[in-house]
Image (tube, rainbow, N blue to C red; front, top):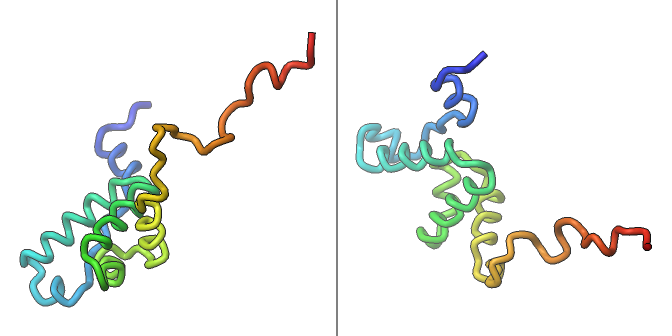
Length: 116
């Protein structure tokens, strides 16, 4: 049985968080409310890692109070947002293009063989 497009979209996305910040409650059709809704629509489509990194990036751009603000806007835990910020720090970026951590992956064939 083949699922139609709407069923597949619902299966791949989280529900969209409704922002409850004072700005959105005061002016639900205002510019801030629309911006928060667009953030939450994107966050709902991202996987777990990219969600926390995206919101961590936004928190970094906002500066002081960014984590608290985005916790209210997105509904994500402040520890999750902090982790996303740490993951994006320059010390965590591997410059040699390697995807896996050193030592990760399958062992070399010679090491696995029992000798000949």
